Length: 153
Image 1 (spheres, rainbow, N blue to C red):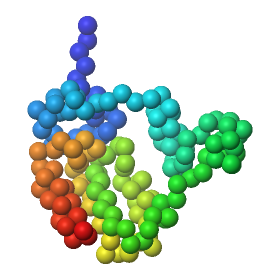
Image 2: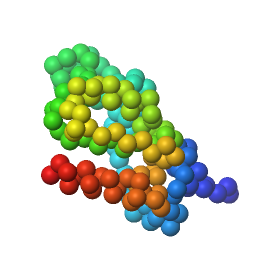
Image 3: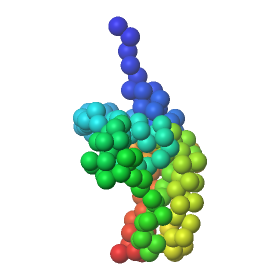
């Protein structure tokens, strides 16, 4: 029976992680993966395929009308985020779930945000899971995140 390398499996949909602490990956895989509904996976797929962040699409004008009062699911407009809400966006150059292009689109939507309340931090070598399990995440991400929280609390 062929073996599955869980590290390669994660990288296949999150991107090539650079700095994983492999002992924490084992713990993550043991405790953190949680079941989800098919509807949640379908919604994720709709967002990915359409390139639009919107409410769940029931794939029926009548069902959407019943749920939303519109024949199509309404979009979430990131520009509606309050301009004075402190936001820190930390993203990775190798992240395949929230890639650099998508983050740039989000930053464009937030172009009217108060400049002193918006921080965008690119960690070039990181992929998605590095933010959770990298050996250097404390220094590269979390120390700055704590400082951001302290500044805006």
